[in-house]
Image (cartoon, rainbow, N blue to C red; front, side, top):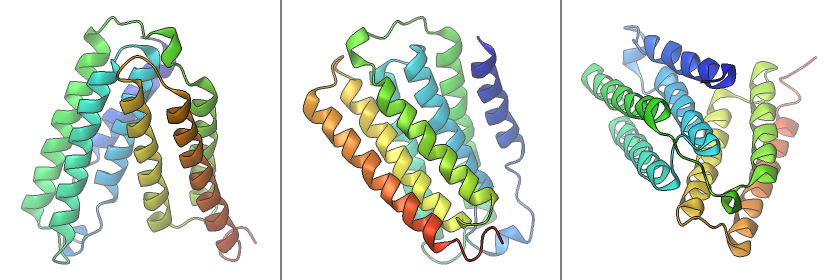
Length: 201
């Protein structure tokens, strides 16, 4: 495992170690640690897909589980409060998903076909992710906006994995992915413009 893969793995582990919730947090529907863990898992799946440790079909199944957890989280929050029991269930589900991802990363030896590579799109996605992080750090993007933008990014990753599942990303599929990234870029630009007043002084 190279240093970049190890760093991401350690980051995910640290996030899971911090998934415990304070009593005050249990009074509302805010689940920032759960959200960060979901983002770390999604990034880890994409990393495994890019490196060949996770196959496209495996990535599809993992992303489907990630979506199920997100849907469960939304349901738990729908009445205005996520209970401690519901939060524990989310933590359990995420821990199980994370364990499966890490097992695949450790056990699989798989070389992705050359024609499923999308390095240009991956670089664009990485730059957009960096812009979201920068906006959050300097205050121009709120946590709520960041969650919405990162949800869009996860949707892109899931579509990309789905398109790669048959071993070929067609021109039409590449156009769709480019369109999704373009829409995400516009949303990020809008969020940054709207947040200029509350960001850097």
